[in-house]
Amino acid sequence: MKPIPLVIDTNVIVSALRSQQGASHQFLKLLPDKIYKPNLSVPLFLEYETVLKRPGLITGLLKQDIHDVLDYLLSQADIHPIFFLWRPFLKDRKDDLVLEIAVESASQFIITFNIKDFIGVECFGIQAITPQEFLRTRGILP
Image (cartoon, rainbow, N blue to C red):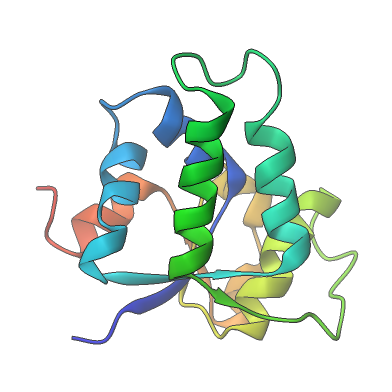
């Protein structure tokens, strides 16, 4: 089965690294299984890095651990240049970073905890869903 193209919002990665108990952690652990294919742009990756390396945000992991996670994610992702800007389309300009790469990569999903922040992305053929909803659609969670 071909991996599902998608974009991961920063809040999902933060959640996955803060707790091993939730759906976001389980979602991220599926990356080696090739169920989905993450898509990134340089600006979105830089946002990941900036947020994840904030002092005190991710406890229990060293900066090198975070760096290793980011490197692995980058090695598994398709990187897309952004030649157009859909800004402003969403209320938050940082959410527009996510939308731009989703449109450019023809992603089916934006994986996020902030569904309400992505209202209207359906007009691009993209669905904003939580990690738990994604895992359910794939039959991984009941």
